[in-house]
Length: 79
Image (cartoon, rainbow, N blue to C red; front, side, top):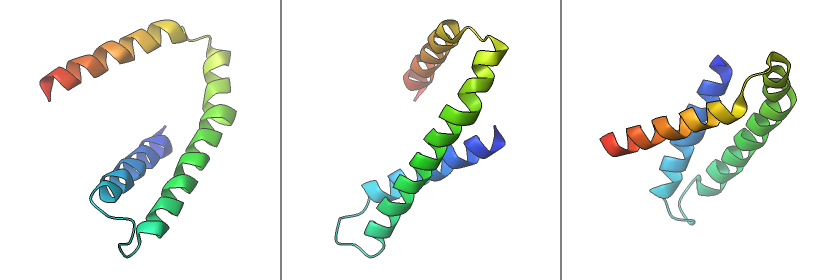
């Protein structure tokens, strides 16, 4: 989970940097490429490592999803 958190932070930072850039800027293409690689790697880990563990642990994913959605709404209201 620590690795996933670091990956999320890296993706968030790259997206923020790209939002402040233009396609012709130095390193723009490189950052887009790295962002794509981060996302592909992260999705692969979730699908092949994390999700099977969740299924095995019999987590109520519907309830978890509702809790995450509610918390996201709370945080957005605070922001």
